[in-house]
Image (cartoon, rainbow, N blue to C red; front, side):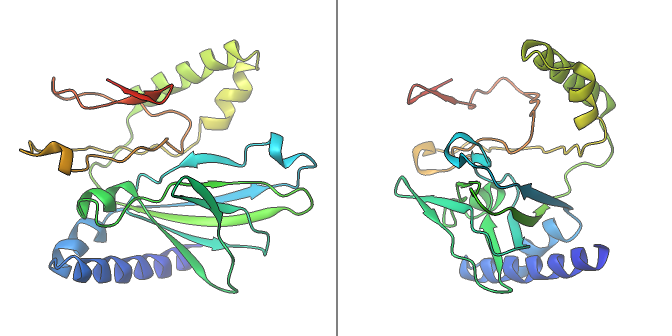
Length: 228
């Protein structure tokens, strides 16, 4: 797995440098923020389901990183991307990698490269396996014990509300990965022409946000309306 991670990182850096060229950026400027960045790997398993229309594989979301490189471990399709409000299935090619543009790359490119909203559906007859490698900037190292404690407490309360065993919920996340991300949005004279972070849902269980100043900007969509 370590060797695979190194090779995928090399692929990611090559792609990032090519994106820099197309954006007329210095390749070094693109490479440096990501060369020592956080790389995470995730393996998803979707068992066959007799009623796939009643089952969530992976709900619609965009990835919070710069790039996600996917390797399909079997031939079962299930990944879909949204284009013009239509969910389009991704056709698999033998031994090919799938590259998703993430939120960070959308911000870096100021919207030239759009973060891909996608989802995963299950199959009624076949299992689906896939492996994803995400590349993020290394903003801050270390483990935030206080926030992890807060997250576990919140998850246990959600377990109570869902009539689940708190221990079962705690066990699922007690050894899970914790990521820290810091976003900076400079003032812009024409904010309507600039992308902060495009609409998305977070792919994790919980995201805990600490606002570092009093400038508003976070919005949530409710009943089709964006609310502050």
